[in-house]
Image (cartoon, rainbow, N blue to C red; front, side, top):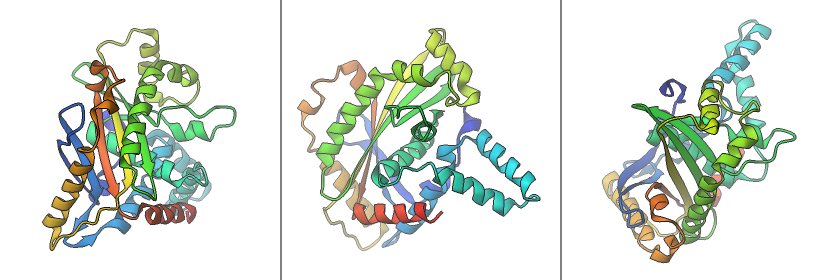
Length: 297
């Protein structure tokens, strides 16, 4: 049921290099390392930003809502599809909070990554709540859902994006604290919005069954996205060497996390946490470009 609700992420992921391996963090299993992709020795930064911005409308609106907006605009513009598409994008971009590029950049990445890597669709769309008069901003950066083989998976996500100075440890520790808070507050968060117009229509029955305690075979997964400004230079004479250098940087940073970082987390909860690590070189400049692209729409 949920697969048809997934939005298109492949064009964005074409410009992201990613790998899955053990990263010397807890829980001890494979996690995901990511970075802006390279073609030979050339960065695909511009294509990455363009495709990331292209996913904004899908972040704000579900497929069904997007179709409603476009169909209404088509009826008003004599079936001018270019006009209707631009109108949809403009409406979506108006939902952005000015002056917070790193937060929205990280949350937008998280939205795409959870769909791509965990095949889970948004249960609740944060951007609509954030900009809705009379509703406070809800805590979780992402609450997604998927059904597989009779099981119901709730995927909770937190994004931490630290620009300027190198702060990987701080971002990592903060992401852990945030994801535990998100997990502990999930039921309260859903209480706030389950009877408003924020749950995806196709998933309303799922959300209500969950709150009623009648949804069977529920499993929680947690995702921490750590995007940070990396200051360690990488080099290579070709694409393979550059990507090997990226893998080494991510592994080295993760290897600096001390065990006491996890001391307050119960082991059965820690086992459910997945990390996505995203080093970005000159992150402040990239965020400026991202803000410019968003502002130009």
